[in-house]
Image (tube, rainbow, N blue to C red; front, side):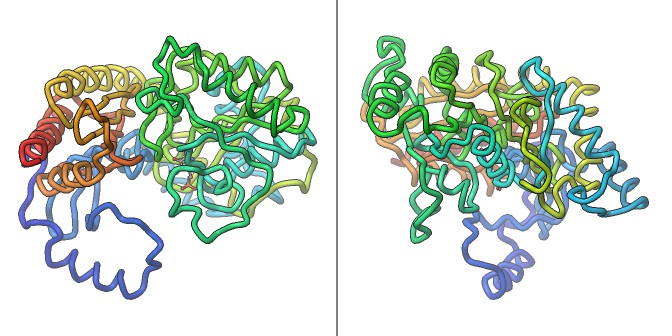
Length: 445
Ligand SMILES: Cc1ncc(COP(=O)(O)O)c(C=O)c1O
């Protein structure tokens, strides 16, 4: 319990348990719920479950509520739009929200070129559109994606996803032409090298052992990557990594598709996380936080790349007016409330605090992140670096039962992605609980 959260009955309480029984009966078992938190309502950084327990939210509905739950400006924009019209298929007609949001995204996405945006309804659709656009524009068939990456679960995006085997098992054959290569995951370098002595071998490897051996660059449409891997474990590549990758791409006329579905819209203290590496990707995919919980996917590219003709790609609900109205309000809120600054400020503080805590704790292997996208990778012990999934799960559950909603990613990483509105006092209260839970689990080991 903290001064912000309140546990009145050990969760899951009786109302939650009744709903869980019904869920088991009627809802697809394919969802992988972290724990039985059954939400009743939420406001800014706080959640209330159906039994009246209150929690600090370090999840933001999996990085979707960057402006906080139910921001009044966003709710007003949605209500206002509800009164006007709910849908009229941007595929077939026009309305101003799509046009205005595309204009904003052209301004906010990295790079000075003139840009256009395609709208879908989800992260996976944003990636699918990016892939189709790259194939259309280049007339090439192959794609290079990264081990540990997550890009969604529809068949095209799933072909790029390589995060957990359960996401792909029994779904083959997937889209052909995808080669997976190691990512810049220095804490667990797949080549067992050390940065910076490695001299970015993970990038040189792509050229020397993939492009020159099995995937001829003349046939490679794009590299597809997350600037910070999300589901794969909040993995932050080293400085310079994406510059090298972009240089390689440019050398061979290969496009870069950056998947900012989880890391975008201010999460890392910049509008888009790739800005931390200073490169201009060719295609930018965003979703999740863009419409503060309403479904949206956006695929943005320069005018010369987004050259596909009428009829080549579309979706009935893509660019839904409610979602676009919400997204326009989200952008205003991030600017007016200076949430990029707060993400940097609170994120920088949390990273420092957790790193110091981690140094003295045997099961904290690595603490990394940018802005308010922070991962704490737990291990069996610092020297062996053996991933500790059970320990991570235990810390997650204990934190939840004490009033802090946090989840894991990768094999054994705790992920912090609170709303960007969070303030120091609440952040400290949440970190107290998370750190205490880690210390307890460490002591009991
Ligand atoms: C980086 C990334 N790309 C794509 C997706 C897929 O998004 P959606 O679940 O909206 O299809 C996710 C979802 O977690 C993601 O984190």
